[in-house]
Length: 88
Image 1 (tube, rainbow, N blue to C red):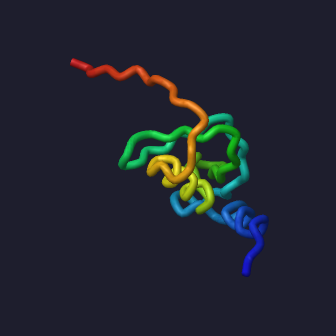
Image 2: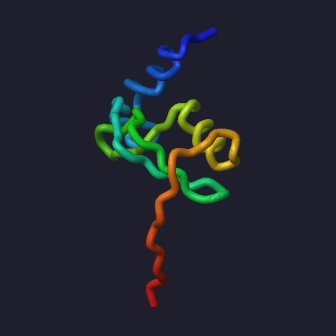
């Protein structure tokens, strides 16, 4: 069985699947995720980001949290309004 720290570290330091840059650990203030039930924003999370092309990588823990929040399994902290407009 793999420890949580080992699992989290596994997404960092490998080659990017898009450009072969290196995926680096990055702490972000806010990251938005599209889910079939809407958008979820996570704050203060650590993700993987390619140092060349910027492709973002997410751990299974983050993706499960997004799903759990979107489906009501896990509570959220607050709701924010997002402006929406159509270009004519």
